Image (cartoon, rainbow, N blue to C red; front, side, top):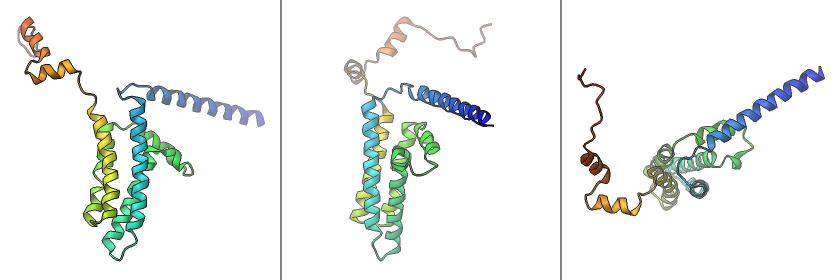
Length: 188
């Protein structure tokens, strides 16, 4: 019985190692963003999440119910952003790993929308300095991911050519008079 249990535990370890290898291979896909830019964005998101949680706590010390709800939303959004960007901060929760993998598979524009749009709600509920600070840092983290989603600028010669009205790709096609055959043409 002990040998059977050892065999099953070894097979589960091998399955876990295989899933880690496939996860590492999927993370190695080059998306054109440097490692320091990704690390900077994650760090900014963690700082924004902590700031939003602190300002949300201060906003909850109030007598108006809308400001209390705005502070509660700020705290929730800050925790959610930390949960998605730095799952190592929340290792004590069992459900973190699937959420972390889900977050890592999202594209940058999706993260920009998720981090940039919801903080507008607490700002609309209670317009105060603590709410503004908490919402601005959360929106800024969404803007950072939006800028990453836009990608790199073109090189200087390409930008100069387009600014002067010369598009080299279009010129090449027009000069060589290459027309790609249409699959819908009736030249049979």
